[in-house]
Structure formats: structure tokens, C-alpha cells
Length: 326
Image 1 (cartoon, rainbow, N blue to C red):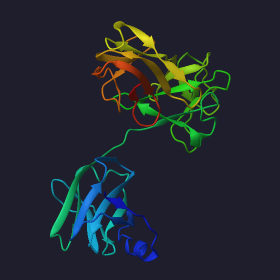
Image 2: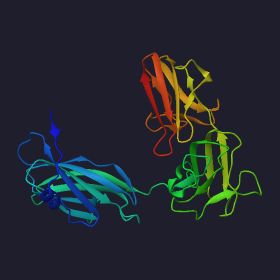
Image 3: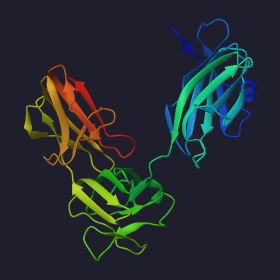
Image 4: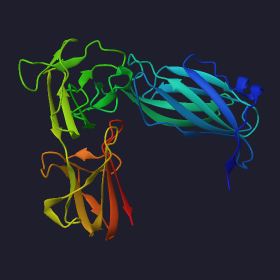
């Protein structure tokens, strides 16, 4: 069985320092029983957004140094090169690379790891793209409180990237909420426009937005139209696997502020099902269980039995479901 042992060796860490301003390298000993010379890219992300950092993990055996570079897939000048020095031992090498925020790295690139003057080379395709914009929600009625640096991120849901949403539990008695463009402070914060229902205004002195009843809400806002909605959102499952495509079976919400999870333990038949909110098809989720999508495909049940179904509508990452057979 392969195994690895991490250790701290000051000399090895110094030798692992990469000669590139955008990279940081660390290495650890790796006992894998391999013989000869080996260099391989063990892991790296497929897609990275502008202005972010990503890690590349490589495995080496009897390689004293190697070059890691990024070149446009269609050919052209390398945008990143770093020489990594390692001991002539089995090793795992981690290289952290910072991506410029200005979009200079845009589209498909090849990550190349080579040694001995390029006689041996490993490559992996990486795609760089613009990230989705982010807006935030903050307030006493939600888990963040009124600290901007703890504000919760909202997800883009419109093609024009002006509209954002979040599912969040709100306590009606705890002071309401506002929207923020960043987590750095109150500049650009959006509060209640008292001239019309459902309107928000960029005014630091604007009143807080409020809900009348505590519960789990689907909040949407449009930063261009300066509008928002906050609708109580109760989730259920529906489909022939659950008994009927006509009526939802209600799920149970777990917790209060800071919780995003709905669960249901029930018998499922061989068939299909989906999730929907408020016994309506206006808001429904299906498709990939690790990244549910609105109006996504039905989710298949191939083995009948008693299951615990979990739906997680957390702000970070995708909407996720898990099925555990009891």
C-alpha cells in the first residue's frame, strides 16, 4: 500500500523555494516504492477565475529540479515559469500560483512540468475565466449580524449578472438586513426605499429591510433595477419515486440562523423525483446532485427503500443533495 510521510526539513524547504514571484512551493517526503526517475502532475483544478490562487500538486522521484510553466494552448509565449528545486528523494511538491485579476490569463492554457531540458514533460489543460460578481447580505436578522466582514455571499442567477439570490433563515425580531457590494465596509450599501414596496436605495441612512415573520427565506435583489424580494421558502420532494407528481411531500428544516439544510426520511420507490418550493413549480431543483440547477433533470432512484434525503441550500458553492439509504 502506498503511503506518504510529511516532515519538516529546513534545507528541503529552502531548496523547494520557486524562483517565481507568483508562486510559493512546499514539499514533503513521499514513500511510494517507485524506482527510477519520475515527475507527474498529481492534481490541479480544471477551471480558475481571474484574481484567485490555485495549487498544483506534483509527485517526484529522483528529480533534483523541474520547471513548471503555463503556455496558451494554441501556442505562444509562456505567461508563467518557475524553477523548483527538490532533494533527490521521493517527494510531494505543492506549488501555489496566483492568477492576475486583470484577465491577462484568459481561456485555455497548458500547465507544463518538465525536467532534464524538457526531455520529459507532463501537461494538463487549465481554463481561466472571469468570475461571477458577488453581492452580500448583512444584518441582525441573519447569522452574520451587522459586521460587514461576516456578510453572507449571494449567488448570481441572471444572465446579465445584475441579479443575486440567497436562501437564508431570518429572525423577524432581530433588526432586519441590508445588501452590500463588498465585505470591506458600508460604502455602497443598499437599504429600504420608502417610496415604494420592493425597492432599495443606495443611501447609507436608508432604513433596514425587514420581514414580518421568522423563517427560511428566498431573497433576491437586482442591483441595477434596485429591487428585491424576500419570500418564505418551504421545500418538499415530488415525483413517482415519492408517490406522486401531483403533490409535494414536505421536508423538515433543520435549525435556525446559519442553517441551510432540509431533510426528509421516507420510503422511495424506483423512479424519479425533484425538489420544489412552496408546492409550486415556479422554483424547482434537479440535475447533478452535487450542483443542483433550477428546472434541472429529474433525479433517479434505482433501488427502492427507506432513505434520508438532505437538501443543502448553502450560500457558498452549489446547491447540493445527498441520499442515504437506511
